[in-house]
Image (cartoon, rainbow, N blue to C red; front, side, top):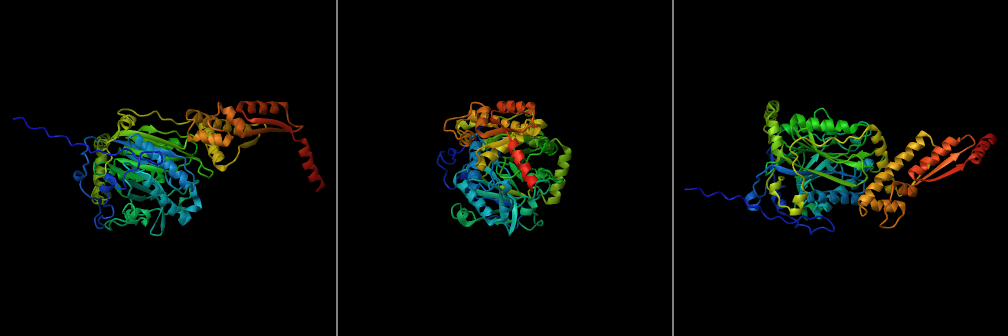
Length: 550
């Protein structure tokens, strides 16, 4: 007799996406994913492998995974030091964009909640308290509903300040992962504000951090969360681990040990500032890391000026087995940019399995650490693969397709473009956030002042282009405010904007030539600045007489 076919598991209905103000109503406080993680506070301290488990997937109605496709999102954010409200809005927007494209995991930059450049404000307790308050606001806004989010924020634990990644989903803190290699070279001074984390001795049990009682216990019924260098093992067999900024650049990088433990998705939330040709080095590190060990590597970075003298150059990207499948812009004036990619985790598994050397070293690492699950944090009922989700048809259309062959062509600016675009973007952030009305430039027609005028012209070109592409966007609104124009005005050309914010003056004397006078005038006209030519002989004579008298 013919056998009766076994029916396929049915997908459980999921509620529609939720977001912040102006979006669909938020989900209940404990969504299905949150209930699945409800026992995060009741794990064993004696086992080397921690398990978060409330109930099996079957009673929850979760479907069994039938594919290994997962959609991942990373982003560039233009954060501002200590602007907790503005940073919250930008983080929330990035989460909403990631959801709209069908992503199940979203990675953010280093210290994105408070801003990377807080400097000595990291020594104040208010910075840590406001960080937790902002995280609670993200929970309340529904940012983590049906989306695993990797946030960057400072955490005080055991009286020690740590630079941490806080991984959350469905209004639950799944893991607080501290940074274990700090950047103290060049412009970096992380050792002044934070301490590099050292994992406890083997067999000492899992470390936990006590969460603020309000609102994490009173509203979300969670009092503590795992703390340490663990990686996450989801119930659909997807594995995810973190390293943070400097750890990618160290000789014994974290991604090596994570890969040998079998972790497939590696994330790096960074606060990396611009240096000439640094992007090329950064790309090579990520490409080589996944080419040697296999894996999916996500990189997020801040972009813009956050109140200091450095410029963070963005360029978030996703790399799979040595090839780039998604890349954001390095220089731009937009505050939020999200890039997504759909990857097949089977590609990672087959890539690693085809490398005998990798298998030998992975087996040796498992033997030394007491098994591949020694550092695993098992999350029952928490999934990342796409077939375990239920999205609307619109979201399904927005989800990126799997890139099966090749990769993106690398977008690396030339040195000349870097020298021009980096300062131009920095000047726009400084102008719009300082409250200044514009720039005044003594334009002599020489190389120095002409270079500055050209950089301002590039800034006006970038802002005009972004404003005209989205007249209702943030860039256009800031442009109208800085130029003192009414809605719905947007500049018709970079010269029109430059005429509002750049005042140039040729200050000539009897020693000046007609060549420099003409050069300054023609450059001012080309840039579009409000230009004047004046004689300053009387001022020079007065100053000389003062010194002669004294």
